[in-house]
Image 1 (cartoon, helix red, strand yellow):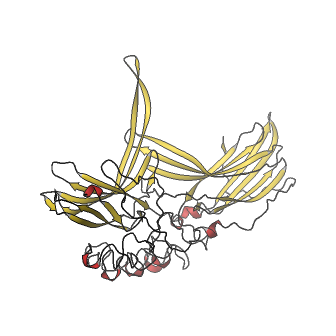
Image 2 (cartoon, one colour; image 1 turned 90 degrees about the vertical axis):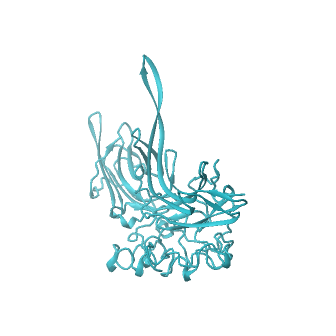
Length: 502
C-alpha cells in the first residue's frame, strides 16, 4: 500500500467542469510505513498540443534519401502548482496511516473546450507528484473535461440573414438557351445542434435546360497549424445534406424546406491558437447536360446557447456532459465520507475574507449584478440570455445560487454528511462519462483516473426536456408547391451572390 495505490476524489463524479468553475478535489491514499520525501504537490494544467508527420525525399550524393518531418505546436493556458506537504528544499516525513490531502483550483474563464483529434488536442489534467531526492518522482494523473459555452447572442453575425441569388445564362454551340434565376434565403446565420434551418427556395427556369438538382450542405472543417516545421492540415466533413429537384425547362418552383442541424459535440476553440473549427453552408446548382455547376457558400456558426430573438420559447441549451448545481449547497445533505469530528477540511469558509477571488460570502458576481452593469444588458426587453444575472450557467441556476458561498453556513467543502460520490443522492453533475476519448486507465507510472471510486447510482433527476425542443419543432408541414407556370416574373434579387463555377 502507498501513494501508487491511491486515487483522486473530485466534487464532479464525471470530472466535467465549465470554464470559470472551481475544481475541488483531494488526494487519498494509505501509507503502511514511514515515507520521506522533499515535497508532495498537485499541478493543475491546461494546454494544447498539435503534431503530425509528413514524408519527403531529397538527393544526397546522387542517391535519393527519404526522411520524415515532424510538425508541432504547443501552448499552455494555465498552470497552478499547489504544495500539499513539504516544499522545494529539505525533507519531510509522512507517518503510516490513512491520508487525505484536499486542494482546489479555478479554471480560467478564457480557456477553450477540451478537444481531441488525430492531429492535435486540448487537454486539462491534474497531476500529483511526490518529489524525492536522488530518486525518480512518483506521479498520478487525472484528466478533466472542460466545457466553454458558445452564446450565439453575443455575436451579431449570427442574426444576419443568409441570401444566395444565382443568375445563370446557358447556351449550346454558341446558341443561347435562356437563363435561370434561383434565390435561396435563410433568416439567420447561427444555430445550435438539434435546431432546424428554414430555407426558402424560389426558382424561375426560363431556359431550355433542365436543373437536375439543388444540393444544400453544412460542412465542418478542422484546421491544425504547426509552428515547428510550419505547415497546416485540415480535416473536412459534411454533417448535414439536403437535395431538391429536378426543375424542368421553362417552369417555376417554390419550396419551403427544413434542414436539421444534427446533435453533436460543440467545441469552443476561440482561445486556441493552433486548432480552428469552422462551419459553412453551401448551395450547389447542377444543370443537365454539359453545363457547369454553380455554387455559393457562407460561414455558419454552431453554438450552445440559441438566439433568443428568433426562438423566444427555446430554453438555454443544456450542455452534453455537465449540469449546473440545482440546490443551495454544493453537496447533498447525507452519506458523507468525512465524519464530522475527523474532517479533512477546516470548519471555516473556504474563501478567506481577503485575497480571495470572490470576497466575503458573496456570489461570483457581487450584489447580484449581472456582468453587464447599468441594468442595460445587450439583449432587448427583460429577457437577457442569462436569466437572473447568472452569466455562465444557463437555466438561471448559478453554481452556488442565492448569494450563498460554495459551502453554505461556513461548513467544510464536504458539509454535514456528504460524501464526494453519493449513492442515489443528487450530484451536481450527471454521471454520464464524457465521450471525448480521453484515457480513463493508468499508465506505467501509475497514472489513473479515480480507479477506486464506487459506481454512481442513477441520478433521480426528472427527465430533462430536449434543450432545443421548441427550436427543433417543425412548423406545420407545408407540402411542396410545384406549379408549372410559363415564364413567371423573376423574384426580387436580394444581395446577389456571384456564383463559383465548379
